[in-house]
Image 1 (cartoon, one colour):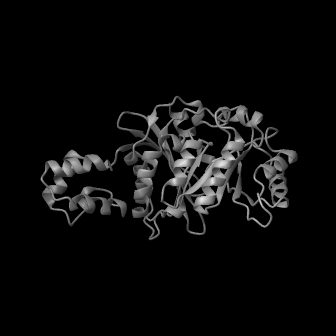
Image 2 (image 1 turned 45 degrees about the vertical axis):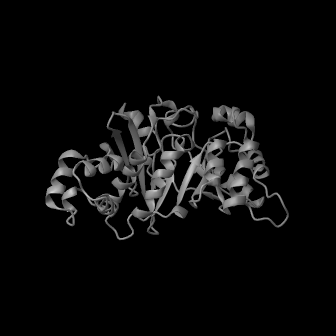
Image 3 (image 1 turned 120 degrees about the vertical axis):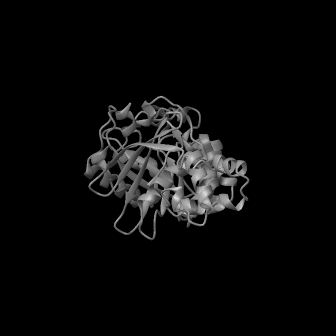
Length: 337
């Protein structure tokens, strides 16, 4: 829903301001058309149907996995591709992964999106429309429950629009404490997120505990070295008291050795005796993207986790979702272009 255009359309029709709230309330509950909004005058519904696209995005492709994961490829009004994913879990969670940009300018070497041409930032309406698409798919009472900004793009490079979308997510049933914003370590964005009031979660895309390898995998490390990024995350925790998630993609023979696990544990170690770890590591089995990398063996991932746990760093292995539908970020768009 292009919310600025909605307000402009309503104003042009001399409608009272509360009409925008009514339209949004219906949309956030999962309405699929203006005609469902029965507390709006019929003439207004006809006007909106005629003059306002119900979504700022067009669905171009959709893939469904055997595990219930749904991946959607959208296009913006100016033809820019973007992706979003719905992940369904047995415990009832319905988590969505949304994009903040079409493409990404930061060229991480293992990421399918990083291999695409960067187009532009997404608007707040284009971000929230990804969530609304899946809200309409989920007719269960809980709707969608969690959101992660781990799709296409670097959210901290589009933080105004990301935060604008986050302000709307609770209306869909996704609380701020169930919303995580991921970053490759863009320190100005981490600092801004630290100072704003919404209790959002922070996730750090790390993938290597030494600067040389991290720069090879993630060129942004040349600009914002790992030690500085870790300190920015500690400052986030000091103000928010919200544990920072660390995303670590497991690449066979690249970053999955025992000594690399120990180096990661040292980088994330507690600062003071008795202090609780402020980081939790999510080890992510690599979903091949046509890059030169292979995913680590299951035994190597388990050994890496055990080494972190032995050094008092909380760590889990992320449940792999949607491998049969190219669910890694950027894969569906890359295949379609």
